[in-house]
Amino acid sequence: MKLKMILFAVAILIAGATVVSAQNPHMGTWKLNEAKSKFSAGAPKNTTVVYEASGDMTKVIVDGVDGAGAATHNEWTGKFDSKYYAVTGDPTADERAYTKINSRSMSLRNRKAKKVVVSGTITVSRDGKSRTVTTRGRNDKGKWVTNTAVYDKQ
Image (tube, rainbow, N blue to C red):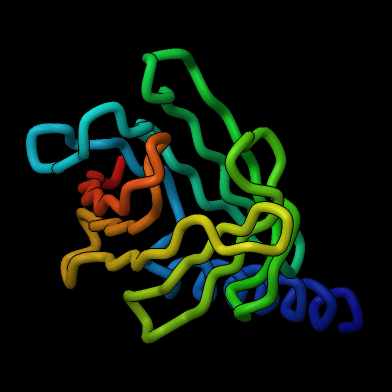
């Protein structure tokens, strides 16, 4: 009888964790749809973004290309709680913060030396098949630019 109760409890925990992950539409792998995106000249592009559970936090893995076409890779692990957590591999930012707006939208901010260098919003479509990331920051010439990247869920 005890064994049955333990197995039942474990099954409930696994099912609960699966439901929590399924409820967050940001989780999973996203590929850039360049045809639907709009970038300023020389802007870096995140070609693949992966959101995955990492304990009680979320890990975000970003692969792409910089303005010259060289490969880039950065990683962030934290919570969507408006607090800054370290980002590694991004020469333009030391830390990143995500803030949940609603079930499908978040804001993001990147800081370098405690100064916000990029801000934006991330919105997953109602059907969960695409997401739009709109960012605003200064380009390498110091001019304010806005980029809109559209991603397809893989």
